[in-house]
Amino acid sequence: MANKVLVTGASGLLGREILRQFVFNGWDALGLAYSRVHGSLRKVDLCEEAQIEAVLDEFSPAVVVHSAAERRPDVVEKQTQSATALNVNATEKLASLCAKKNIYLLYISSDYVFDGNNAPYKPGDSTNPLNTYGQMKLDGEIAVRKYNQFGVLRIPVLYGSVESLGESAVTTLFQAVLDSSKPVKMNDFQLRYPTHVADCAQVCVGLANRQVSDGDSNAGGVWHWSAEECFTKYTMAMAMAQVFGLSSDHLVADKSPPSGAPRPFDCNLDTTETKKAVQVQQTPFKDGIRAVLESYLP
Ligand SMILES: NC(=O)c1ccc[n+]([C@@H]2O[C@H](COP(=O)([O-])OP(=O)(O)OC[C@H]3O[C@@H](n4cnc5c(N)ncnc54)[C@H](OP(=O)(O)O)[C@@H]3O)[C@@H](O)[C@H]2O)c1
Image (cartoon, rainbow, N blue to C red; front, side, top):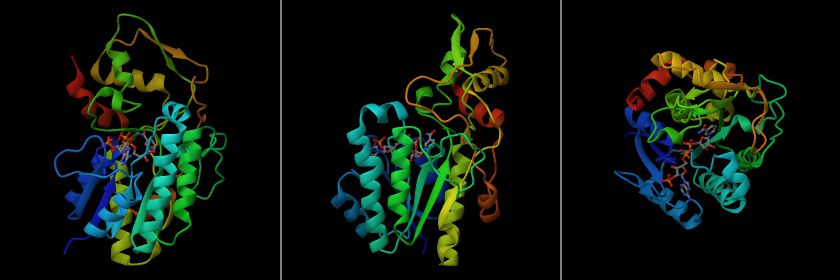
């Protein structure tokens, strides 16, 4: 019988791909969504403990991948209460229920748990989030780490197949690339490592396979995954223009720190241990972004 995995946030950018790859790898997978329920996705409000418990009891997974979160730092700063309910309180409830039911919980975290001053970061390095979102992701980690069977996967800014260009902080830049009618300033200060969701999903499947096949805590602990190519928003936009032979004359490099919620300068994640544990590709940015953006060309 196939192993069972429950994926939260399965209507989201990363969760969609995680669900797809578990199914592709022969798992019996159930995806949860909240406002974007369609197809075989199940509606569960993770802020309601009874709803979490009901779906865990009914589906009885061996593994839960917890991808649901409010992940927009500026929204988190403004809507702290609802973001805490999802990012921290729901994670705590899910972790405690998984521990009670002997389920391996893989929690998706963020490079924003670091302050960005001492990259590259190994999984055991000291955390020091600069903004509320980073603090909430760390609080989620702390909640998960109280129990035995957990994995924490920290990842950087993501791109992949999007429902609209605005869905990812990477693909949204393409809107400015396409509109060459006026000059547009793009941040050329903060260092980013745009990572394809397919590569992150492979890590999730790999860790889950280790956990269920080895039956011990080989997949436990904190893991880092990231692409290696380093960009700023400006150089990402320039790369997009180059991939499609578009004009980039209107793109203006802005060397000042980004506005809004404070952002770490460089959170490069050291992936050495993860590469030893699971076999994963690192999609080159220009290849990945070409495939994702092609259908958005005018
Ligand atoms: N995106 C990035 O660049 C990035 C970078 C680093 C780490 N991460 C982490 O990666 C994970 C996935 O991010 P993502 O980009 O895929 O996020 P996303 O696209 O914004 O998706 C968020 C998911 O959370 C679900 N959700 C929201 N409120 C809910 C509730 N009350 N109950 C149940 N589900 C709820 C949403 O469901 P509906 O849409 O159906 O409402 C959606 O599936 C997050 O943990 C995030 O912190 C993301």
